[in-house]
Amino acid sequence: MATNARLPRLAPAPLRGIVRSLLLTLPIAVWSLLMFFHPGSHTDPKSRIAAAMTALFMTALFFMMMRTGKTYRWRRWFFVTLGILFPVGFIYNMVIARGTIGIPIEEMIAGRTPFCFLPIPLLILPAALTKTLVFPGSIMTSSHGIAAMVGLWLAITLVLGKGWCAYACFFGGIEESMAAVPQRAKIRKIDPRWRYGPWAVLLAMVLLSLALFEPAYCMWLCPFKAVSEYVAARNAVGLVQNGIFILLFAGLVIVLPLLTKKRTQCSFFCLFGAFQSIFNKISIFEVKIDQTHCKPCNICQTACPTLSLSKESIAHGETLLTCMKCGACVDACPRQAVVWHIKGTQIAWKPERARLMFLYAAWALAVMFGGSIIAQGLVTILHFVA
Amino acid sequence: MAAFVVFGEALTLGLVSGPACIAACGPVLVPSLLAERAGVRPHARYLSAFLGARLLGYLLFAVVAWELGALASLLPAPRVLLMGAVNVILAGVLLWYAYSAKHICDPSCSESKLVKIGATKNRGMAGAVALGLLTGLSLCPPFVAAGVRAAELGSLASALFFFGTFFVGTSVWFIPFIGMGCIARNQAVITVARMAMALIALYYLSLGIAMLLGRKGYGY
Image 1 (cartoon, rainbow over the protein chains, first blue to last red):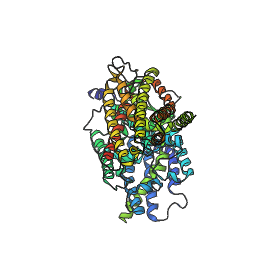
Image 2 (image 1 turned 90 degrees about the vertical axis):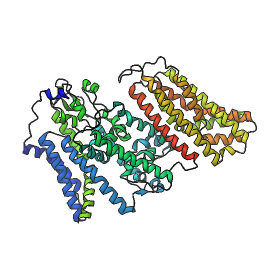
Image 3 (image 1 turned 135 degrees about the vertical axis):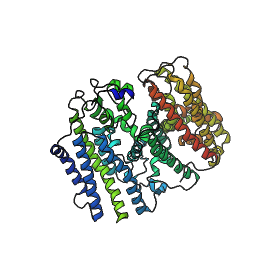
Image 4 (image 1 turned 180 degrees about the vertical axis):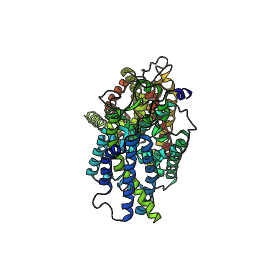
């Protein structure tokens, strides 16, 4: 790190003018209004207030991204808020609707559970081989629902690749909140082989789900069962299952992010993240390293919250497959060598234009998906406050 | 004529049960194959050893199924105990396999280079035999169906013949696995395979222990 201090720092990108930033923010402002104030969307004042606060919050963050040229810094405000408010709204709604967040297995099989995207990779092989969905969620209730979800996922994935994990995943928001707490990481040396963890979990769970015809991940390994619906324990084994959920959550989502300042569950364990990484290959947006500007100071590598940069990948001028395009490396680079890039164009060809195009798509998703969760959380808080 | 009917019946049962057999064996076979060195020939050798041991498991089961005639071996209580024991041993073998595969990348398996293996050439054969035998003894639904039918046959030879033919029918579905030899091996692939094996082993271990203790494998 001593060499980093001696690096000549290029002048930071100048602030964009207020009027120009406002004009660039206008599409997101309109999108937010459409999302939160469409006709018949609110019946009580609390939800109207929550919607207005969320729309303002999301629009303001995008404005700051436009004004300062920084992405990660402002995205993190959104993401941390999402991570905090998701369990608040979700658990409250579950308790109101059911009286508990422990769901009996027969309810899960019947599809009377909230939709969760994490087990999507687990259902592909059983569905392809036997036309059976081993899915514990409401996706089973209608073939139209399945088509809509798959269509939406495909569109998002084609454009953003693994961007879902940085702009929509409410689970990721919880660990990002934890990672944001400490000033410095206590554990800095992490064996890079742990990066392969999500792929191993994906492989093992896909194979076990096919063999046992059940979403093995949901039954045994999902850390987020600790803050969402879980299988109601009816015997000792059920208690062990729930113990595993809590231990994984405490370890991967709370303790390790606090110690490493990384999103450890995403980096070492999340099977959906590994699955989404595959689609980074077909997404049109990516982050590249402009070799003509890069001094290998590895600041970007340290800044990456998911260990998606290595010395080798930096030497090749690219991120690893697991990059979720959060922008941390772009913001951190003192020489503006890490740039947003559109495939098929030359590196560093109008990177701000590439950033803008990516951010419009990503923030539209963030408003639509994360925004509605934030609004729901705010409504819950307002219920308690008022 | 009767032998021909038995042959046709067993082969058909094997062929239609193949996907279920692949699903049942997949968690064991896929990661262990990925932990092997690349190449179609090594994969064909590994798969032959695996399937040969699996046949042995089938034939052992055929003897038991026919000898016990009344299908005592298929009653729920002993079946759960047998499955529990098989799962625990399977977990042990997988864990050993995951551990022993750590040297597969030695001496220099960089992230982008293919693996070159010399001294560890036949490392996987014993593992393949052990895993094949244990999966051969696993009581998946088509296997139980074949066991019921074999027990009804008039002689031990017929039962063995039935299971042998059933095995041939199911084995056809395993041939495409040889193609996994075309996947290049590097540290990433080997590490993922080892980690996946360890996870799957823990899964089988927990299921096995729960079965041996007479508990349900699940908390519902």
